[in-house]
View (cartoon, rainbow, N blue to C red):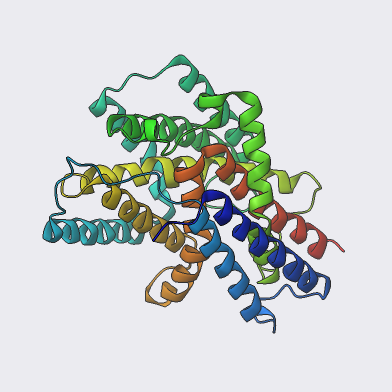
Length: 336
């Protein structure tokens, strides 16, 4: 059976996207912005439909190769389970301090692979790192370290995460196939800005859905008081794509690639890291299973697909817009 064309799949997504925007926008106008609101089931269904349509529109660029060896299923399952166990154990033992070790992991990876780093890559990664660091100075949701320490950490996370991620993807032959690519590096400044704008457009239903489901009502967002603070959303928009997607997914992929073809190993790594990343956004423990499944399916997987199967800049725009709209509504709700 012939696969529907990319244009047809895009049109289906646009239709679902438009309907979701209208309905979620209407819910907001009705004052629905609590997780317990009557419109919650509708919001969840709309975001699920948007997610399915997006993942169908942006498929993996990886295909089976004639030289691929069969998956060693036993080892494959063992590595996946070991990775899940290790990731959960690390979060349980060190919690949010985990991010302090990621730049070290990235540097060790760079030294190990010894992949060439172009001047353009280094300068672009540094530019994004400085933007994330500057925005991190206003990250009022961070309380476990000072704003200056958080800002400095963002610089190292983004700089090392991007460079190590691109190095791993180049080493494994996936970067030339379009996995984890940057529009700025491949097509230039105008393409990068276009991707950022497209990411904002694509992410609008998720941004509205976050607010409808109560994303701006908790005390976590009570810090938002000034008009400029929603713009600090660019910090997680850049940093979390760098370390949560471009660093960790290829890292797990390299382990799985030893026992499975890339077309199976990479999606598996993407899913494992996606749901683990979602778990980081919960209270943790066994009680977080439902929240992890919901966040992972409706938010982490779409962002992972956009970042790794489309491009970095679109993912940054998508991620930024979700948090920016959430912070903007918090500003309105807490200061009216």
